[in-house]
Length: 359
Image 1 (cartoon, rainbow, N blue to C red):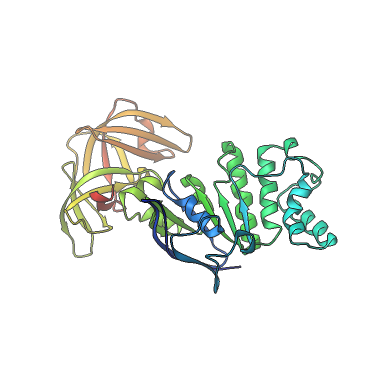
Image 2 (cartoon, rainbow, N blue to C red):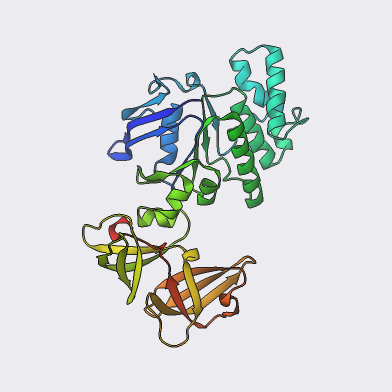
């Protein structure tokens, strides 16, 4: 196991700054995910850790060793690429054995370890096949075995599941996470898929414009996003304009949202006094409108609804034209609601207020 330290990493191409002073410690054995949209800098940062890209400034350390200017093949990393990067003319066995042969390991050790890692990824007995004779999921397992068989100090994975269909992605993320927990290999995983990040990670770094906007455990980032950007990118969220009223003695913030008084937590102070309310769909209540709305309630009309078995998703257009999405779970009063119904939306104390400028 190896601790990875990124210190003041910057990377520029001509006048364009791709990475902007990133510092982060990734602890031994951590599954650390870089999450963000295309162009945010996550793959460039991964390639800096791998040694494929030299930072304009800053340093990369594996444990006490500064590896900033160490060649990739001397960093003792394992790499899994989006397109698998298998040798098409070599068998599965030879693909997995490649790194061991490059390190001039004894024949007996190669035979033993390749067999062990093919077993671990569920490919027992398939060592004699060519990559072209295997499914996408099987090829990804070969790539994973090839990366892990050399027992790397750090495992790097660049969107390894993006070429798989939905069911295979779920299956492979379970395989990857199980192997990572078994080997305790420090892993840096790049993805734009929030579901993958939430399901697999010990820590998630949400990136935006070459910076880490927020970093923390999956539940922390999901429940306590510090910005509108993070709240939208990690899970789904309703964002509504909020006017600050006051802060109560217990620290609860009170804001006006579409004429309703809503209580919640303020994540950061807004320099211009403008806020957005962040409300997850599962943290909103919905019921048929009868009479005058109560305190902390706003009215709207159901535009569409989708029944998904264990939950129903409602798309509600508020009276002022804003869109709100609500999730109702199991059998409830919401089960009888229909498209076109006038409804009342209520808020609970899990709502957050973030600066509007963080949008």
